Length: 396
Image 1 (cartoon, one colour):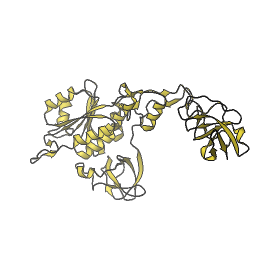
Image 2 (image 1 turned 60 degrees about the horizontal axis):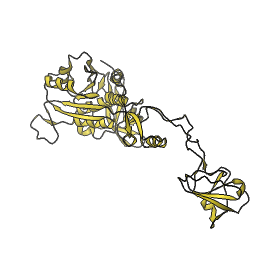
Image 3 (image 1 turned 90 degrees about the vertical axis):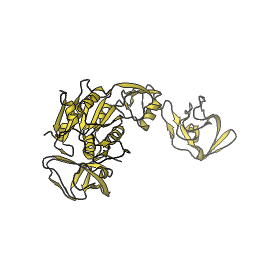
């Protein structure tokens, strides 16, 4: 039986950053930068005012109060280049370039304006309220590094460099295929033995949450030849299937791919999610075949597929954030297998409780309560109330 760690490594080894594309900055949110962006100018580009007030020579405001002649009016964006000489000042707004000769900004609240003069009642120390050119970055600095996930702050930094477009890794396009004659689309009438297909919706939502583009297909009947033809015809970056990978008589995914030399089906020492498959189809497309019980599909995606999709997006850090929590109740664990227990927060100090008694991989309604997955090592035989446990956070 393959260990949880070994199967995670095998799943991740199938993934590599996807090709890069040039996109408008407006369309770059949530994508991953593919190249370092450097500044060729100092940032800020020139000394500028941090306050609304007056640009002065500090030597002129050492004896207070003092009246100075106003020689210019400088709003933000002004291209004027006045010179502040002895006995003069320039009215200045936040962000405007500091004029030559001035070395200090006196906030407007420390002054009284006249018609063409200003009375300075108080003044800060020399250099106060002046933002210096290059204090943020100097020419040659990497401002946004390759591999950066472009969120609001990073996009602002890119825009500050003057880039209207950026080169990014494209999103992985992922086919999600659910299998089983018992599955019908949500909203369809149910006859005895049928259930609504929830897995394709679960996995498609998980793909999108991981930053991919989901192509949801299903439910697909238990027809080996039709399924094989479908899987080999898909033009996507990865395929995720659910169901049909165990040892039963109707395990259609396993039967459809059994002749593929680069696809393997293994037992993984984990609960839920013991039956797993992965590999590459003849055209090189990675495929991840997950078990069909909803909790198994959910946990398997988190452990094996999500990290691979993040790597395809160009991210170096592909792991969920983990926290050290405390168990609120007691439950048993499977001998010799790691356990992935859906849990929810039930109190302060990171106290968690299992969403259901036992590991019931079919308990999809209880799964809606899950805020994390407790990862219990294979050598632990029982979790007791008060035990420290490691939890993957799967919701905010």
